[in-house]
Length: 141
Image 1 (cartoon, one colour):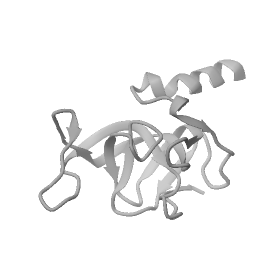
Image 2 (tube, rainbow, N blue to C red):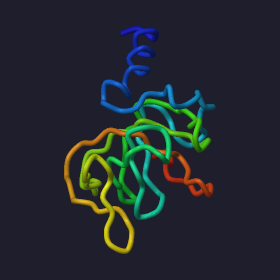
Image 3 (spheres, rainbow, N blue to C red):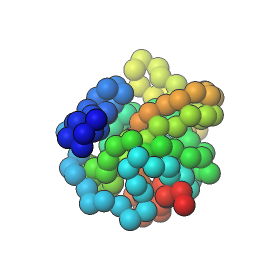
Image 4 (spheres, one colour):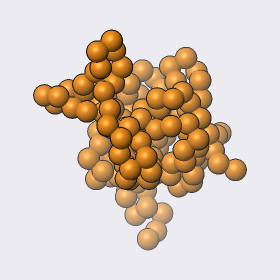
C-alpha cells in the first residue's frame, strides 16, 4: 500500500468504525506527545470518555481507566464545538460502557453515567486534553 492509499484509508477510518467523521472537526497541528499509528497511555481522570465523535457533545461509547494503553489510529483533529484535539483510538480490554435508554445515555440517581462492564475491543474518539487543559493521552516511550 502506498502513502496515498494509506492516507485515504486513514481518512475513511472513522466512518468505517461507525463513528462521526472529521466533518465535525478541523485538522489540528501534530501533537508533540501523541503519535499516529503508535501506542498512547490514558493518564486522565477515572472517567476517560471514548466518544462516537470528536466533541464533548458526542455519545460516550466507553469510559477507560487511567493506565490503559490505546492504539492511535487516526487524527489529530480539532473539534469545531469545544476546540479540543481528538484522536481515533482502539482499546482492547475492560471498560465501562454507557447504558442507553430510548437512544440516550442513562444516568444514575444522583448523577453520573449509568454503565455496564465490558471486556472487548472498542474504537472511538478520545480527546488529548480535558477542557481544563489536563492531559488525557500521552505517548508510550
